[in-house]
Length: 160
Image (cartoon, rainbow, N blue to C red; front, side, top):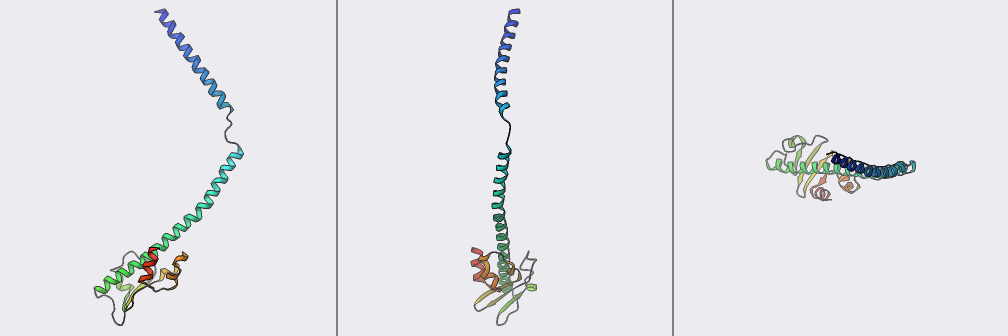
């Protein structure tokens, strides 16, 4: 029994000494590591600054494009509501069928900004919407400058 205990103690001590040898190697390796130098830290900060400078305008353009598409989508909703209102006989008829904002309230939901109306003539539909004047993207300059906008021009702008 004593020999068995002695053998077990010897095995433990050799394992510990081997483990300690490995640990001392790791300690030596990690002892030489000092961490990041100031130059490395500055390089990382400069790279992050460059990435931020590139990403910020891109995100701004995405936001502006979504706002413009929302305005164009509202104009399309006004047009759709006017067509239904005209079919229901709600809009004033004459030489042209004019659907004013008050007549369209039951047919157009969610448009809370600006004033709007839609008109049908022999040549087609036009939409007058005050929010079209605040479009920011240059590709919608034709829509912005020709308020009231025709149905065809509105559909082309929505597909861009």
